[in-house]
Image (cartoon, rainbow, N blue to C red):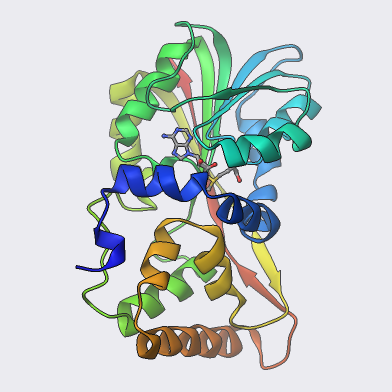
Length: 276
Ligand SMILES: C[S@@+](CC[C@H](N)C(=O)[O-])C[C@H]1O[C@@H](n2cnc3c(N)ncnc32)[C@H](O)[C@@H]1O
């Protein structure tokens, strides 16, 4: 058994995001794409000025910052102190709370909108997060969350995970977990949202991208600034790691030209729904 299988998914995620280097690397590199999703995430939350909004899985505070700029009174929650330290600088007007998105420490019906920027793929039981978002929302309140687009999308994420699939050591596997793109797949997201008490579901694609100076940068962005991808990349034997990196470089050059800097797509889907 290899390193990525030694823990269950929940503790892997919790410990991974608690690491200050991972949090800082995510904020500096990976989140360049997440930042491009904030305007649509905030727009789909349909907030009125002065509205009480919860930003769950707030990370380093980019969504909270956008909500504050839109006039909301923001509570931002994360289970990583390393992330909350970064959020304190980025969104000083928000009230920061250490907590779990699947067991929210808030009153029923306390908020008129809940946002969640790229937190869903990290939650072992996403229906619990949807149910908790619904519980803390007033009737008519809006949930708005983002997920990286999967199947069929041209994406730096696919470049990395396909390279792992083709060249990774087969014994390096993730502990059982929901798929990272599940909650933007209509067949999964729509019934789950309905079961949690939502209607009027919308999905909007944001064509976010990374600007990279090195064609193997996507490997390092995943290796140093994520949890799921990092677990799969760190545990690779040297030979497999080299092959994965070469495969990503080949893909970037083939899809985006031989000379850099490169603009690589990493599109996202913003899913929003109204509490009934
Ligand atoms: C990929 S980062 C996204 C950060 C930020 N929202 C953004 O849009 O860039 C995921 C964040 O979710 C947090 N997280 C994951 N599972 C969580 C849970 N069950 N409860 C609270 N926070 C969680 C992690 O600590 C991390 O800060």
